[in-house]
Image (cartoon, rainbow, N blue to C red; front, side, top):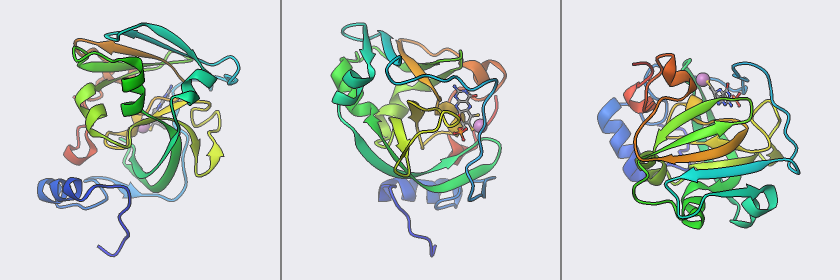
Length: 206
Ligand SMILES: Nc1nc2c(c(=O)[nH]1)N[C@H]1C(S)=C(S)[C@@H](COP(=O)(O)O)O[C@H]1N2
Ligand SMILES: [Mo]
């Protein structure tokens, strides 16, 4: 591969190469340069002063964080690729936000949490296994993309980014995290999308 591989641990690349024969572009995907907007329904407009993160379920303490309390947990930067189930991939995205690993620590997420449900302004939901979130050291709640605050269209002020899974799992306009002790389908999963959604295994539907 002549392309520069960024943000992906070597062990992860070896796994992908072995399982799929692909280094960077997952099977069945094509590379695009632009960044399309994919939203079911309207675009919620939430200002940071009105934004809250509600946290409940398998956590030490159920809480509601303001935007400032959320940022105080600590902001990091990550560089990675995104893969949409509708077959487009976009390389080299730089995200700033609060890493989920840091957030889970701060919130005291219990070991009994096996899955997390994103709850969004506007009603969208997406379920993700905790094992994937714990294994993906790029997974975050993002506030900025390529140095600019996230547009409302792309999920601003705060969206999930989980580059190891198809992009529908990266919920936009996140306002709640529910820590569950079992799996449950989110919005697209109820319409037949995969409960897991690993692009390297082409877990698109079913
Ligand atoms: N709240 C919410 N989050 C969402 C969606 C949505 O419709 N609502 N669409 C998902 C899908 S299918 C994709 S591919 C990505 C698209 O993100 P983008 O519009 O920033 O490209 O957001 C995901 N997160
Ligand atoms: Mo998507």
